Amino acid sequence: MADPWQECMDYAISLARKAGEMVREALKNEMAVMLKSSPADLVTATDQKIEKMMLSAIKERFPSHSFIGEESVAAGEHSVLTDNPTWIIDPIDGTTNFVHRFPFVAISIGFVVGKKMEFGVVYSCIEDKMYTGRKGKGAFCNDQKLHVSGQEDITKSLLVTELGSNRQPEVVKTILSNMERLLCIPIHGIRAAGTAAINMCLVATGGADAYYEMGIHCWDMAGAGVIVTEAGGVLLDITGGPFDLMSQRIIAASSRVLAERIAKEIQLIPLQRDDEE
Image 1 (cartoon, rainbow, N blue to C red):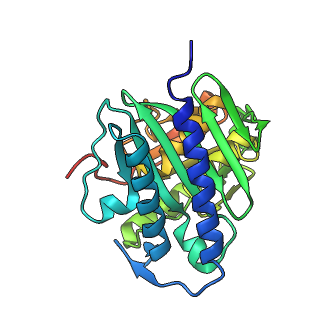
Image 2 (cartoon, rainbow, N blue to C red):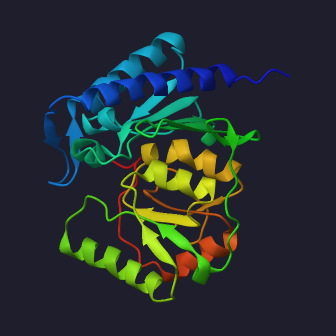
């Protein structure tokens, strides 16, 4: 039977490449930087331009599909996930990296049908690494098949996370105390690439054993989520329960044992869901 979503996936890859060219071009020029929810939550004209390009291209090619985009939501659109085929897009994941020319910047495209992730495309455009995952078909980086490390022993693990853009003292305190609890187990170390999508792809490659974060959004996770699971990894809620794309929190790990062990250490940050007003 023909794969009904292959055309969409091929189109997503071509859009990610086009967006990557726009990012690399923009890096040669001065950029206008604006603030969103905090002085550390940045957006540029390039973020908005790429999302506009993708949205109009998808609407033209697949007029019946739905769309959730980071910048559309920032401009007042609601992110409600229905059963309709839905493109969930982060035009630039790692905007702060982009602004500083720190070399990890990703285009993230997730495709969800019936609220289930069907495929994901994450293009690390400065490194020129195209990560793809398709439900039931495996995960790849530049056509090389990906496998998670399979690590189950937390004391032998390398984790990735982010400090986030929220600068409220209580939130920062919780983030740092979570890192401290994990480091003192002890684990091998904690790294941060500055983009959720690339952090998750690093778990898919086996380069990191797990990633956890709170305060990120469906557009940060939808593309890389399928890549992790298709590489043999697991996605859990930060509580250790089932993963929920709209919950603003995730553990992506190379094994369920490791994910559940991390969940035991994490103190929760209260968050609004992506699909709440």
